[in-house]
Image (tube, rainbow, N blue to C red; front, side, top):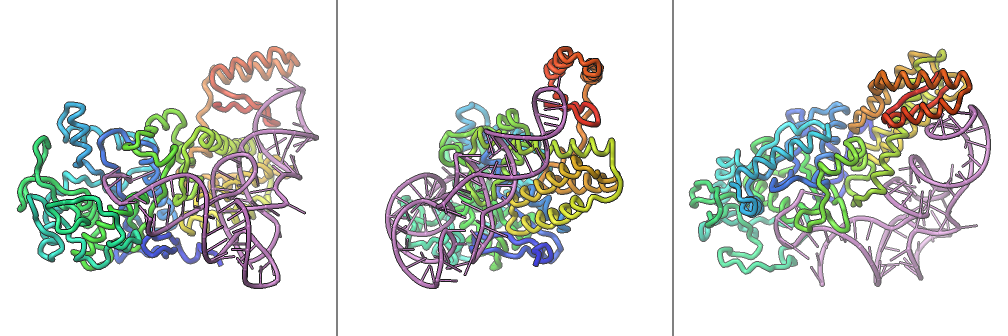
Length: 468
RNA sequence: GGCGACGUGGCGAAGUGGGAACGCUGCGGUCUGCAAAACCGCCAUGAGUCGGUUCGAUUCCGACCGUCGCCUCCA
């Protein structure tokens, strides 16, 4: 039986198994994904969850679900203070600047924006309120100007990451904490920090984990469908979010905890390790198509090594897809008649496989395999003796584009911009030379065309000029 | 030390208790003035290692080796 008839499943870190995705009472699939801390330009690793969850949303939309996608940006944080001090600017200025650059960089991915992108700065009242409720419930306590979460008061602590409190390595002495595992909800203002907010517990700022509990609740309510983020956040960040949100609300925070694996560059790519490639640099070098496909050709829960060889491989894969679209262009200029049975059948089965794969824990690598079934069916139909008729060619094109669009790559199959007039003129001159069997001149003209950045391919329908 | 993920062809990457997808590369062929693209065909008797369960395991179980993540900020 096809899973398409059952609906999508996603693996949940919490239950350690596939869970059916069921929309909430308002009909929406509500999804909260932890975004970056903006103390510098984001790296390619940060882009993985952005791509994965943006495309997941696209897919769910295509599947008929309404999705509300929330992804926060952390704009108050120790590292921001440090970076601001180093650059000699105010920390809120620095955060605002890198927030801007984060949006600009991720916009270049052309995957749309999350529906809501909350910041800590804009949620101070909600955060303070949240902490107050935790204190009322006995789950938190003020101490030395800070406020801490009382981890041992929350019975489910450790359920997400599979840790028991007694096996956690305890390093911090913490004279302010009752228990070493307790974590800060509110941090008292320290000298040198150029921003702080008033609170019932004195001036200060929120701890890292509380912001997500407060922002998720503000945007999506106490309970929602999907909570996502990198697997490195499962502990302690998400564990602490659960302790906070479920401690206050008494209901499961999220039905499904979806975590993407890490991007590797000789170990996890992380700013603190210093082994990073900036997203903007990767974008400059490879372009958004290649980068998006790079993230999607591997399952989101697998580690993904970043490297030239893999990116080059990805680029060639995309060329293959583009060539099929080009074949469609040619066929449309000289269509056959009637229905090409094999093409029609393959389109149906590939489409089913494609959606089945994505229903099965968002299995994008298998979805790509289905795409290549379509590619080959197109090529065979176009090269074969009996070409499909115009109507089928158009239907094939729109189906091909629709599938590519799910994974954000429809640009591969939409007709290219026409080559500049100059190039077309050269191509025409080359045709004349070929007709006159002046191949030396024809090859020279091809070199000139290449110098302008175009390839010319001779086909039964005449020369096809494409950007190289 | 604890918790967890993973080890598949030259590379990337899937599914599966009984024929090892898909892509890239490579090789042979077709087409072509040439080239490119495409098409046809070939390329892991074996799936980290060693045991066990089974009629049969790459797929289940165990041990070991190795890689990686988390246990501290981290997508």
